[in-house]
Amino acid sequence: MKIEKTLSESSNMINIQKSCLTAIMTLILSLLALYASLAGVLDKNLYTDVFFAGSLSKTLISGSLAQDTISIPLSLILAVLSLVFLKHPEYKTFIAILGLTGYFFYGYGLYAMQGQYTSIYLIYLAVFGLSIYSMIWGLTSFKPDVVKQTRLPGALRMSISIFLIVILLVLIPVWLLRITPDIAKHIPGDTYAVFVLDLCVVFPAFGIIAAKLLRNKPFGNILAGVALFKTLTICLSVAFGEWFVPFREGFQADYGMIAIFSALTLFSFVLIVLYMFNLKKEL
Image (tube, rainbow, N blue to C red; front, side, top):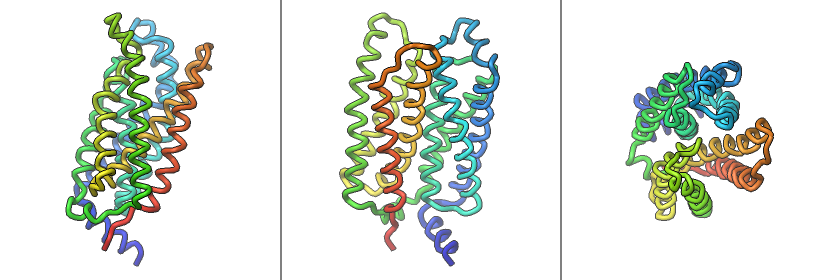
């Protein structure tokens, strides 16, 4: 009876055919990402070949290894959630899938834009492309008339919007300070794609979602979950990388950045738990 109720709610909330196609795409994406991340960690020649070609720095290799390490469990989680959704469609599971897809959009967008021309570069492009269309197809799977019936407690909705705004207020100035010297030298830094994705895509999206939450727009309730899952996974990856890269390369870690991204990871996790328990659809 409970399963029938869940299926009924999901059928009302999302287009099952479109959402299942999205889950198939994210399943393929997760398997490709699992292969790519395992290759990055296990194949010592994958990145060193690019380094000796002169297009990848040692620091960027360490950063890639840190991201690959985090991507392994996340790709497994995404694969499991995709399979679970295909068997038992549930809209909260679908929100988690889209949020995790946001991580792979970001992570493999970095690899694609920074030109990390390893022997599996085409797989990076495949994951990046699949993540884009999975998110687009997935978000359009929600039925607008039914989404209007979703509700979050006012305090939680306000907390999520403030959290997203704080991210913008903290990171935008930091990113601008970091990119300005590169602009002055007319030479991009190793991680210039971070600035491209954040300043052009992620930060504007967070601003839009925060505005929708503040104005109590129903679709903001859905987008909030996607943003929180994406924030949790990316901040976890960055926090780990801020420790791993200096440890591997033998230089002083930036404890301020570790603290910032560790705090963002923790707050994201707490908000996700509250979000998943409190997101409701009114009858």
